[in-house]
Image 1 (tube, rainbow, N blue to C red):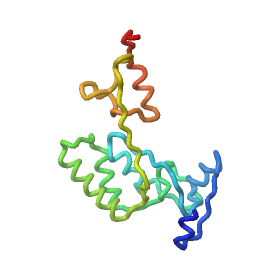
Image 2 (cartoon, rainbow, N blue to C red):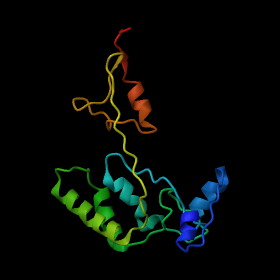
Image 3 (cartoon, one colour):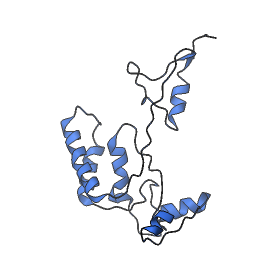
Image 4 (cartoon, rainbow, N blue to C red):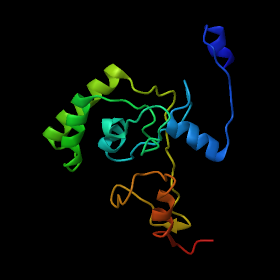
Length: 163
């Protein structure tokens, strides 16, 4: 807030707890919000779909998708996302990748949100005590453990018996 004020913006820092935060966020009752987007870990469409017009609602009305608080509307992007939704994501599919490129051009041109930081995860799994971690040979999930993903990993681990 101090940095924004120094740059000439009227800003204040306000911590909002629990339901009040969710209501403020979903109803768009803010000018600027620092928020974790949490997009997809394997399909770009799942993240870009958060910018589909079907989720846009007037300020004061809760959005049906908490990841769609930008209230962005663009029929051109909607048409591309509608096509991508019906496809299996694959870097080997030229049509899918072409649609993804078109969608990203629109996203980067219009910037419906600003990404301040990315969450980079590069864990190293030690197989001395446990086996069953995701790998290139067994890619049952991305090679890191997102929030709900830990459940997928922990139930596949087997003790090695090492002491």
